[in-house]
Length: 462
Image (cartoon, rainbow, N blue to C red):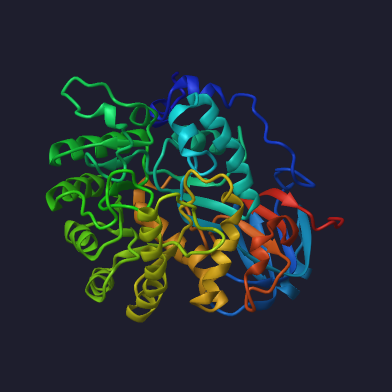
């Protein structure tokens, strides 16, 4: 035990971690995860650096020890004496790996019924398999917006399974009857000695009422290794109890979590849709609004004025929308879909710092749509602006975690010193992003931290 860090020891049950021991990801790619021999030089490329600027030609990239060490002209790259490998990208675009700022690593690929009834080991094994698929879609980093992802993160970081970098929030913190209260009706009322329900025991969500209890639950997630904190500050579409228009948590309760997070050098993100909830969260010091599709101009002005991030998802009534059997939830879904169109327009109009995420939750049939859900944003922005949102902008958002960031280094950009999370793609992102909807075909090389995860360039290396 002497060589285990305190955080790793506290990060999850030994029984859950044991599930990953010896587990090898299926070899779904031509040449599975490997470390290049010495420095690596990418040549013959067009560069999108994550800033949103135009593509640049005539460059080469030098990568060593998991980082980008130099951006060279093609001529400098050709003259460089390199005791390592060269990969000719064949004129293809090289771009940063995608960052999904609202992902649920352990909850995306399993139904809600299974999450509430299955053995915990099964839930984590499903999550491990989906983590590899996420990485093979070109998503090299996710900000986990709630769920028991600590063990999965550790397993990925230690190389036991393949998957993206995870910025974990831990359990979603919810008030009684809030968006994270998954209890059945027969579990109410809750007494002072009532045991936690299964969702709370697994670390999916935790119920806290009053500033003192919110403070305790926030500190628990920080203790387990949360890089940021997630609170439920309003209702939702899929909710069993809480209406979409409900406002959750008093300002002093939200502030208790914000102050605890700030004491640890990080921040709070909140699930909320309505103007009242958004404004309350901002007054309490929340740094990132999740969803917010029902925002009005006053709320958006507050976000812009306070420098608050707006983490939007393309919730539209299209092929990726959840299907609800009852009229009440379909109506809430319609309101949010109409609000999504207004929200992107307001975010652009007022210059709000905007992040991209998918929020696929309890919907295994929808996880393959991750890239498509980025591509559809070209309805609202030009393609390079959209791509910057999912790379450089989202990398800036992750920077709010400060010293709680689990991965020191710049993410979402191709620049000297940045972490070498890269994609080589068949497609021209200045013209459109539909190529991201078919990653098996169009993502020719995927690199995470300098390691080659997928390589279908089909070439001989020097």
